[in-house]
Image (tube, rainbow, N blue to C red; front, side):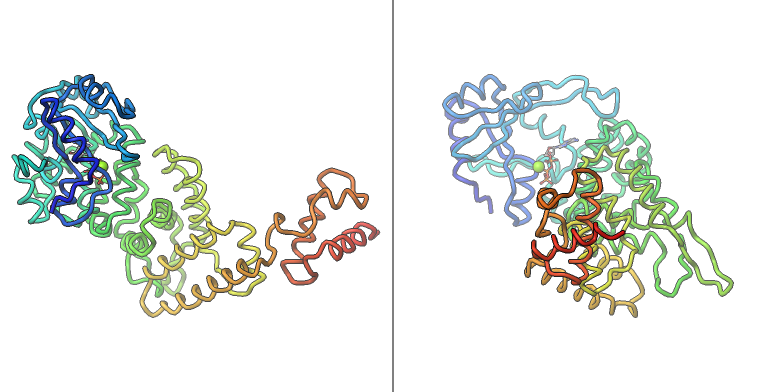
Length: 444
Ligand code: ATP
Ligand code: MG
């Protein structure tokens, strides 16, 4: 069950030969017990940071978080995080321990960890160390805090969100008492740094069980993203829809690939619906202009979560364009490719597919249309057809060489030529384009 990489065994041998205890701990133990291969290995040890550095003095050692007892040791290109056993005492601000104490006791180290399934350790000599019933909770698929839930959430409120994220990632239920404490203390999540919230929030959104977590806990997520609350239970009164706005949103999240920017865009694409709702005289509901409001609200959420600029740009553009019909003719597709760029264009198709999966089943034929749009776009790209100034056969210098003056007019002429090429009105050849450019500018 525990197939340890050679590098981990080397680290164990070196630490134990120097007289210290060492174990793998946390996520990797959990992964092994669940029968999946861990992505990374965390080692916990009785050695103090300076002792770890001494033991691995012949290796590359990166002082990742020396204050907290963590160093990264590089063994044959393999990065291992090695952390001294530690306890944390009194959290006066719901997020930072006032002191980190190193200890020589594994039990104390495990006791400071968040959930029973994350609080197990293993090494090949001692075997599994499971003091808090993690293995049983793993078998029963339960997320339960180590120790009293309220106390553990009061120490570090991020754990409230982590409970939801592990329920989503692992497909587990949150134990009743743990969930009740999470609800009671949810407001203290406000004290947590945005960056930490964002990390857990995106992992939650990308988990395999995100749908049921989103459906059962919008109140907790609403502490950081109150924009989702008006969507919950908001009836659409429209034949395209069999779900309320929140249920629809959750279906869309589940039906786009598990990549942070796509899941975030799916979560926020219809945030503008409650604020733009109107009923016509036939009793049919409409949400005119909702993408515009969703775009503004999504921007606010992303600012609050201090999301990096690249992700922010992608999410905002996807929300902005999610409801604009994608036509399957190649002229329209080239224009969209030009406007969005290739990657975002295909991301938008993913969002549209997911959006459609959240609608009434009788409208699913739209999937075929989207397949056709994708196919056409791929063939445009494969055949290297021109849809951007980058691949236009002339550039600014070419125009200047035939007498154009530098300035904004150059850009206008290039754009005009690109339009003609995208509409297949002329060939993308330098000779033809220059001819047209010259005659265009000689017009009275
Ligand atoms: P993943 O595979 O998704 O990274 P993980 O269990 O490794 O899961 P991390 O966030 O990397 O999760 O944390 C590593 C370990 O550190 C956890 O398993 C847990 O034991 C402990 N831990 C992390 N954050 C906290 C916290 N806020 N409070 C208590 N223990 C924590
Ligand atoms: Mg981890």
